[in-house]
Amino acid sequence: MSRMIVNDTEIQNADIFEIILENFPDIIHSINENGDIVFTNRAAQTLLGYSRAELLSMNIRQLYAPDILEAVEAGFTDLKSKGDKRVESVLASKTGERIPVEIRSFSIYDDAGNFLRTFSILRDIRKIKVLEDNLIHASRLAAIGELASGVAHDINNPLTIVLLSNELLMRSLKELDGATPDQIERSTHFAADVQKAAEAIQKLADHLRNFSRGTAEAHEELDMAAVLSDALFMTASKVKRSRTDVVCDIPKEQYHIVGSPNRLEQVFVNLIANACDALEDQADAELVIDIASAEHDGVACWECRIADNGPGIPEEHLGDIFNSFFTTKPKGKGTGLGLSISRGIARDHKGDITVETSPENGTTFSVFLPCSNG
Image (cartoon, rainbow, N blue to C red):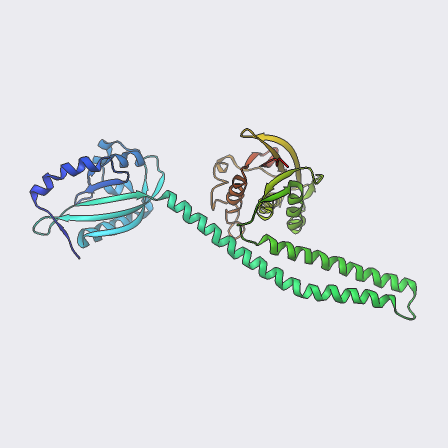
């Protein structure tokens, strides 16, 4: 591997380049054989929160997160021997914030091949990591959608046969000779129950298939109450398992909005499902849902409030609940994606989601969506 060779005169002239590098947007620093920082630029001060004097009195090992120091040590040794290195790592700011960075480093040697110092460029990649997280979200949602679509298809095929056969059965029962009117009525009643249950399953299968569609869905005129009703239908079994009483007496055809029906339904499904989880061990669990006119950020909106009487959200978690992958649920019961994605969908619709919580009054999530001019 090629090495950068410089002589003493070139090292002295390096001060000229240090002036140019001072205003470079990425961190640039140089460290000696012991790892002491011998040069740094303004970007390092801005990103890490240290003064130049502090940085020049520090060892490079002090700038990395404690849990990766072993990897840092191995990488430094490798860099001194090989001449260049490109890695991703994690810096720790003066306040303790973890900052993911991409590092490109070169080693500088004298004429005899002895290591002198490194020259490194460190780029803040937090925004890139956010984009990567969003791709992970999309990938996971796509997998869920494919699974849901497949399940709906598998259910729907035999259901079609059940519905058709049941209809023929009901006709045949009415044509039976020798059967009493009571027998025919009772048998017809049983067949009607089968028909009703099969139609409910078919509705769920159709709804599940629609719910699993991609997110590139055209916006249309919607009734917020109708979207909420569909979400309650989708979460009915979860509500029942959590033994939650739902109070929701909202008239339809009054709360006009514009948006993607499936994406907005996903918001309400997530919020209702989360409320049921919070109420799982709650005596007299109750979920109250209503819609009212409101103003949010100066925009006329419909506000849908989903209020539970659960234990509330601990204050120390409030700042994180909308962050990707943050969850307080046990392993296997939550991915920490629901609230993050839900707020993203609401904001894509020029709305928002807010939360109020206390141990005494439970938790209320409010979904704000702009009123439609129509």
